[in-house]
Length: 285
Ligand code: CO8
Image (cartoon, rainbow, N blue to C red; front, side, top):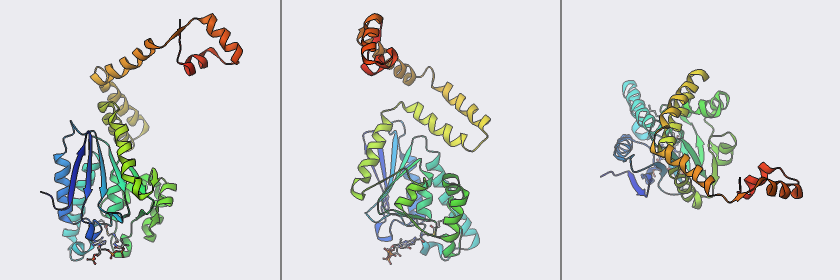
């Protein structure tokens, strides 16, 4: 039984909560191990989207545990970096989408774990930053890499070199988060987004994640080749047959109208037959 990680499944959505509130959910080795084990235990045939958040209303994750790091040797430092990186890469490559609901401080390792998720939304009291250089270290859980990829090298360098924390509105402005919500509404907003995702065709969603993740690391030619392969993979699947079948069926179910009638109607409204067909939900016969 995990001490610092809570896991809850609501229908097809899994919610992972980092639950070490007395240390503002800072990541020590135990938290990382428990998070790793929790991810391994998620049944991805049942769960189609994950939400990652922190316990309480003050902090998402206030970084890697400074107490634990303070006495590390060079080798131990590197090993601790690898431990975090392995878990964060597992999140990034997780077969289903992961939404970070950033409910407060996301500093150092906290900003880094949020960036390993597919989508970030945050509360209005959230604060992001990579304060490592002030502690005499570099970001060690992927911050130099993911921040530069997300907000551009110039902005990432400014944030990392100055160790300046930024508030939710600035994080939104630079594209580090997709949306900002009042604290009390954040988790519901994350659930709503997750519910919208789980209503889509699951194989297609997984393939989109893979195509974006893999495609953004390579040339455009290689990227579109990755997409072609994953696009092709969707065909002959139940999702594709059902998804396209439903669309065509809906078209069949539309009320019918003859061309002369539609033309007469359109000339009165001064609109095109195509527009009228669409906006009125009619099928031309
Ligand atoms: N590590 C350990 N404990 C922490 C951390 C942390 N990162 N952050 C907060 N805490 C603890 C505090 O020590 C305190 O514990 P206690 O009550 O026992 O004294 C408790 O949480 C509450 O914190 P504060 O009293 O400081 O709360 P405030 O509201 O006054 O301040 C802050 C909140 C501003 C978030 C402040 O706690 C702070 O600055 N925390 C540190 C933030 C930080 O620098 N994070 C980056 C850490 S470095 C990092 O993440 C590197 C990642 C890569 C590692 C690679 C390894 C090789």
